[in-house]
Image (cartoon, rainbow, N blue to C red; front, side, top):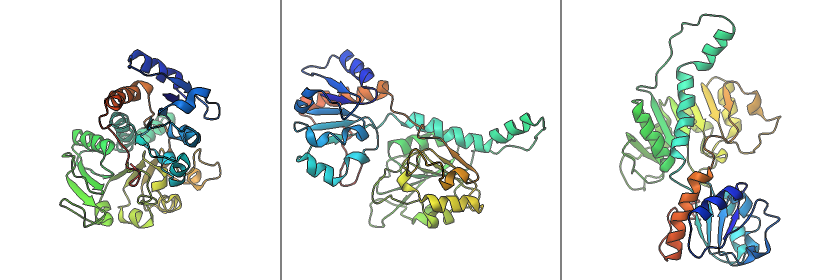
Length: 322
């Protein structure tokens, strides 16, 4: 196996501690400086952005385990053609829900409790007795109700929020009060348009994967369907947002605020309009980092399945993109 990650040393220590049978491990932190034995590896484990470049010259690969939930760098059809073969692609799921909940609800609570405003008043020695808001009874809209969206929905119920979910098909999370779907032909009940989903939301949170179908999903039309009090939070994928439309909505007061962890271009260029847009908080892709201690056990579980010839968990459908 080739471990290709900025945290390769830590991953190797964790994998070694698992005492996996019949596994020889080599590692690298730089995709341009692989060990010579990498060409014989049938498993690659690491960060999709690092794996994508050398994958076409790793002829023995049968399985790629990503350390991220998103695997966009590995989905380019040209890359798979260059690789000259099919291989199993699995990603990391089920480990980011708690971190994403901390992030999303941290900023939602900061907004409701006016934390920054209270701190500004304190610095000015000004008594600010304006009452805070509350999450109780507020409407949360989740773009995407996979494992992360389901964790957010369950956390929302702790605060007695009303939860709407917008998904392609699934309706498996019972913490969602009402489901909306993009296609009326999809299974299940409660199918509605995206505009109906957005109507009267207090918070819109995007955790959909970055695919062709979700590109610029948060556009002028969707933003216009939100009430002016709404707050948009994106810890998911930057490609989902029409950033120019978002900047216009915030600058004109058609949207109350936005919290953006992911952007279309990262790092965000210094001259980008969002740096100058009012009521935006940019958190530089830190919402839910992949921790080796969380990800390594997923690999260990899948490795045992791989050597036993059993189906792997968290397989990515390369056509759907997740």
